[in-house]
Length: 406
Image 1: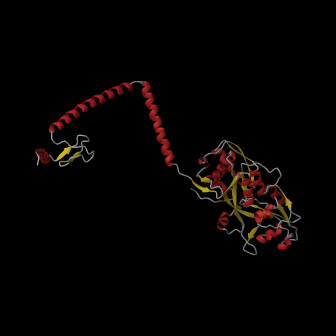
Image 2: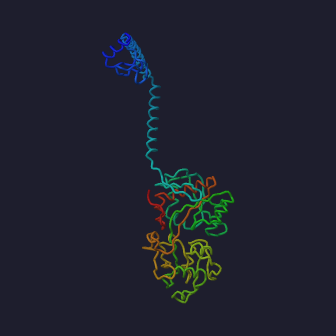
């Protein structure tokens, strides 16, 4: 065995560890290479270690002097007022940035619903004020007249309080046609930013929109009960669904046919289309010759109140608290189980919810997907209507909210 190997063995025996000259890792005494950086370990001379130690001490001394000089210079700079102001501004900026980051991190992520036709998301917020991307300007709405109850119970006022530059106006149909189909037609023609609808969109309406390069998005907003109301002098208290259909299609023309007095029945309608849209009857060719037509539900109420034998129907939200009319109980066809749609002059929303009342419907908000501010307006209005705050107003208006609190 060579003498150098003997020296290596002796050194390894006498020393328990070896310090790597490159990374200072404490290696085993038997190691030829550092376990961390694989640097060869020099065991032949203790002088190299002592030289390294001396060099390290020199480097540490130089580094200490540099740190001391930097500290002295920094103290001098701090005496400069401009530097102090800069540091204060920088510190405030960091604080505000961290605060915004915390707010964003802890802000609740809204849930959402998705349109089956366009796959567009409509967010469900807690309050109207949280709704984003609300456009500024004047936007028109129209369509189904049940929106009158929402407006009367403060929906538009609440929206304006949260978004001051989001102005809304109702647009009447120029042809005096208050039907749902005419409201969608006005929306497609650009006369409305968004439309209320009392029924789902039809295939024909989707087709018309597609031919114009437009997508329509309908959002369910509430559940409604349809009530029949008549002149107070009418003695009949309840109707079945098939009797109601027969009245408005001209098959039943006298209250005597329903067990009442010998008095002609005078149906009051906004449009013949209502018979199909609400009662589900396609037989509108024989509408009673005594039918009177009006352009809104306020006129319908006045006509019924003033006309003996008159009868009409409307959203429960529009005729609540009306004391000068008779509200008919309603039963399923060929049934004697009559259900009163009101309790303490308010719509019985629990009956609507359980499906106990025979005639309910879903209500919709419809807007265009066309890349215009009208699209933003329709989406923003829907999101405010569906927020917790908006759904409480929906309930106050006599409609059943579809979405629980988030």
